[in-house]
Length: 185
Image 1 (tube, helix red, strand yellow):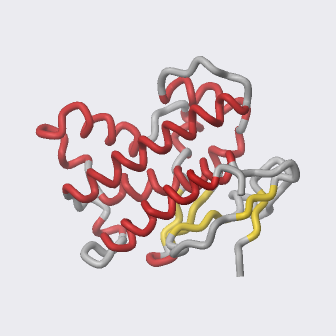
Image 2: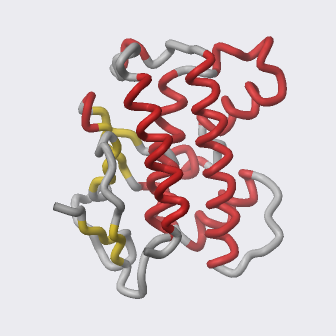
């Protein structure tokens, strides 16, 4: 399977999220809950997003990337449908569009939260909140699917806990320019 090491990394993060949900139910009323475990998972997840952003940029022909802004500017042009991809968090029936802010040429909140925690956790610990973690894990799922597409735009996912699943874009159809996928039985 193409890029399976990224999928296995995602599955480990998803498993850690499932364990976290034994203590914090992933509902809207808990989105502002923050903790050291959420901070750890958020930083791990965003770091992996950064790795895959670089890989996606290389696949699309850009090798000199330095920041989220550069990823956003480049990938918004080369993969515009990514901004509209939705992820469903099955356990809580929550839908999220982790790249929705790119439509307004803005940095995602989960990315900003990671940077605030990374550079000054003492004063920014409250950014290590569940809502930011959910956004980051959702973004990681989408990024994994984009780097794992075959020549027919199909993605074969490694079975996991199925907490996070990608859904069709806002118009409700999956077109050739958007990710096509098959879920394992």
